[in-house]
Length: 167
Image 1: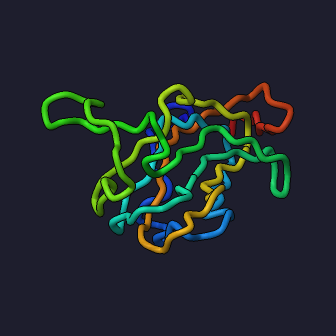
Image 2 (image 1 turned 30 degrees about the vertical axis):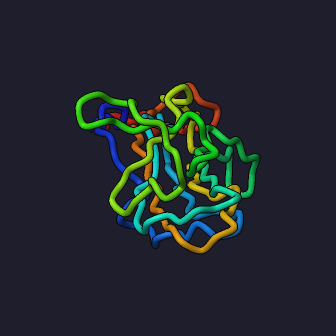
Image 3 (image 1 turned 180 degrees about the horizontal axis):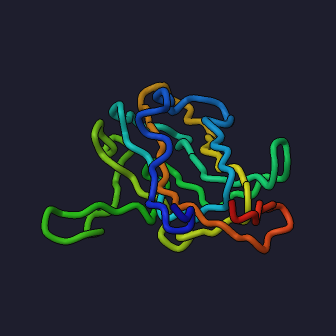
């Protein structure tokens, strides 16, 4: 199989422990890939109803150039009514209803990250990080972040070594 033709895979989601919204800024999980990748989309699954927060939690998707290396925030998502760009469908049309209160976010809802930041291509063997960048000041609400990634391979990369033998 040619890696560049491999399918999309989801990271996060079921392989993560639920993250409480009051969790301090921290890495949720790093995913180390032996190839470059394209982040196609990302978001969070709400796993516990939200209460009102005066400080809304913020999650981010980030990439690192190597273990312990430089962190680049690809996209961040504020979860709550302070995010004036957060809309949901009305059952007929998409993005029709603006969030009015943090309590609009309920168990089973999915909040997708900002559209303008996707897709995002990385170079060879970057690390994908799901992170909390701002904690909520209240203790009700929980999330599970996820991302959809597609493998990319670049044989020209100065980080890639290829065995070219034909046997």
